[in-house]
Length: 99
Image 1: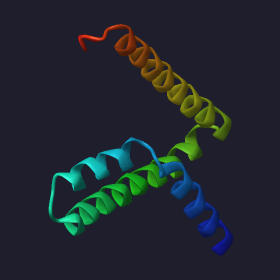
Image 2 (image 1 turned 180 degrees about the horizontal axis):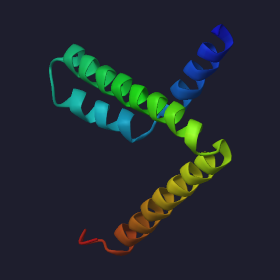
Image 3 (image 1 turned 180 degrees about the vertical axis):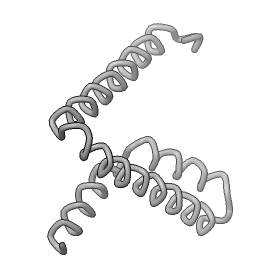
Image 4 (image 1 turned 60 degrees about the vertical axis):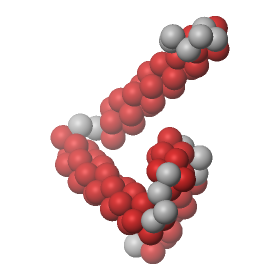
């Protein structure tokens, strides 16, 4: 159990560095003089999101094959990444900021 706990911790920790969640936390904390409250709120949100993911993953894997779940997650990330790239390209092409 300990190796799974450690590998999960490091995987999530490294995945969260520099992502939109961290950037949102930095921006919220920058507009507040209460970084402890920002930390508590963001930590609670991440714990809840992780709980939902772990519960859903365990339940879904009993019904849907793991390969299909991984394919669906991969396609979801591919779609999100493509949309972000296209939006960034549109914003760069429109200096007025109408994109």
